[in-house]
Image (cartoon, rainbow, N blue to C red; front, side, top):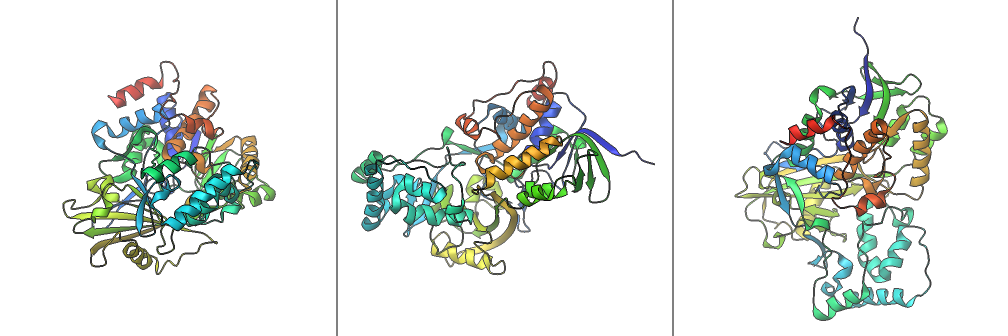
Length: 486
């Protein structure tokens, strides 16, 4: 009779957060841990696929910036110096049949004069209004920050396309550091002197794997964490907090001492047997959007207008997508024949507020590409790829923080933590670097007694571009890391 599996540290989910925790445990010399994941690959939502035609696709237009030196060092360790390509973050808005440099609010000079004046006069009205009012929701914040013109012409339509949620049903707690503010004097100068007003991303560069898409990063991190400690195609079905046991879908039990969940929090709460109906009902009120990813591989010359365009935003209703990435520009190896092929990734949000017809979606995306001039109607499309991510973005709803406080308090009473993009459900710290570091910092708390920062203090985390490093357990994991890094 075989003995049941046990692990001092059990981690559910082999995405960036789960792999970050696993790598940190190994780095600190802790060997009694196990990662389980229902999928047949590591990476979670940060994975990549190759279609039958040989095109590589990500689940979205992933780009990688970093707030942490630790994360940067690990990325270098994962793919090496030669495994990365680096690009300037060229972001644009397509509307009124033209490209407008990002951020929109700093480049009003590209608009027709009537709309330019509506936006500019709305900003003037803000400066004339001396009464400071605390916005109660995202829609009020948009109007209080950008004025009625920018709000009505760009901010409201774009954000609904992106979030698939009415902005008045979203909070403002997540915004800090995520949206560029507006300087009236700078906007006026840009209009009068016909200058562009760009806000460069920190570091003014993003990186992307030379081969294999974003998924190649996390497969490499899984290798560093140790494949023997990662069980794929192992789906958690039930959790007994009292017994400290996770039951897999095949009925196999795994007993643990400490448990970290990195899978969607609402689903996980449903699995925990000891939680009350009140807690489970609260988890069911967490909101999120789905994301439909449509990849189009084309043959022939890429349109000249797409040169030096890394990300493009689309607020108008002549296309279903809110963002498009020239994915072949991220790496020429994303297409099978770089000398004659190129590719685009379009993202289409979905929710009860914004339904999507799955049967007609690809045709609608192609028509939208024609309407926005990204693809010529006579261009040859040789690959069409569609992936429906049931968890696209965690929505920062008005009730989110109160719900999360309740859920985490209940879980921690049972010795369980939940972190990561959907394990933590905080959009403001849900990028790849944030997610990985949430796993790392959880380990630091459990093993070294160091309080977590990223999840509980998003503003602090987002203020530190590439400056955060971590202590190591003396004489333990530092050797592992240095050997792996060469």
